[in-house]
Image (tube, rainbow, N blue to C red; front, side):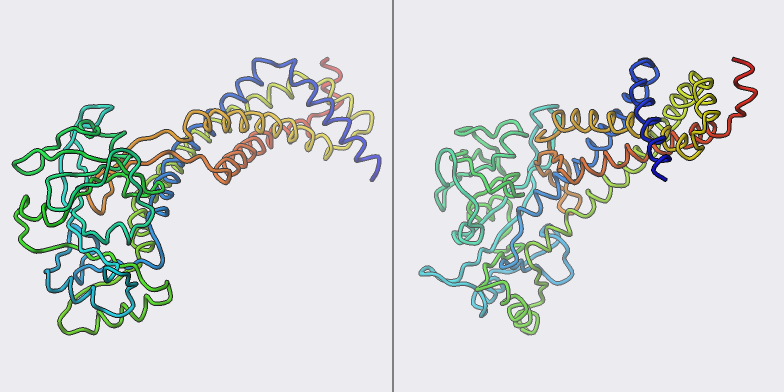
Amino acid sequence: MISWFKQLFALIQFNVQSIGERKGSSASAIFGIAGVVAVLVGVLSIGQGYRQVMAASGSADTALVLRSGADTEMMSGLSRDQTRIIADTAGIARGSDGAVASAELFVIINLPKRSTGTDANVPLRGVEPMAFGVRTDVEIIDGRAFEWGKNEVIVGVGAVREFAGLDLSARLPVGRENWEIVGIFAANGGISESEIWTDAGVLQPAYRRGSSFQAVYAKLESADAFQGFKDRLTADPRLNVKVVRQDEYYEAQSEAITTLVSVLGAIIAGMMGLGAVLGAINTMYSAVSARTREIATLRALGFANGAVVISVLVEALVLALIGGVFGAAVAYFAFDGFRTATMNFQSFSQVAFAFAVTPALLLMAITYAALIGLVGGLFPAIRAARMPIASVLRES
């Protein structure tokens, strides 16, 4: 057994050291696998970035109240009286100014993207004063907050980066008037950074919404208070509402885009992976063919077939790992933090986010590269072990 391991170590050392002698074929395999990894990581980092935005937006101790049957704010509707009943319900945190709950209005406006100039749906949210108590992560980073009762708005940093016309002090067309942008805010990377905020009382007449709202966001006394709060609202005969945790609501909103990206990534990775496997097979067949006499001589000297097979597989694995690490590095520097915006299929509005190349994603991609190398090296390895020793030595 010790002798077999010595044989294996010697063969692996010999094969790996000879990779540099086959620069062309080795480079072809490495760059082919690197390309697969880079594209796979790039595509899947879209879903990771989008998911992170949604995860940063939710809180387990915040409840979202919608009309029963509505899956999104766009499909919901609540009257002023209903929002007051909700705000008076036990379970909501209360401060010196009353219940920490904000009845809100959600509309869509068209603005051009900075990168392409094409129109995009940008969310404009009308809020009440307690909105800043519900979303404690919202912070004005430039300018000031809008004044209640005035045609003024504040804009999330993500929206400022992605859409034209949202710079500080610019005038934003809302309804029949132009409203002044007086501040820019951040929200810990959450979805609010893709939105424009204003006073709901001013936004309602601008869009002829009367005294109606679409949702109520409420900060609860604790995360454990949710079920009791939900039960009280759904049992109230004056209401017909649906109550969800804010984090669960945004998690559900991320499912469509992340599923689409994952499926697309799997298809692309499968197609490119097949090409990379064929490239690895070709590379390893070339390596075996170039060393048929050497391999036959080693087997004639007593080197075991198993050691030969494993040594060829290790050589293919080394090439694959080099390509995988190189592709992962390229993907990280090319995609991580790259900012863009895409459609939220639930609200039909744009969400600004950054690609996220996570360690788990890199590890998965490198593992996929290793699998490509092992599959690509399997058949050449078997061929190397089955070559007839006598005929090979005679021909050489």
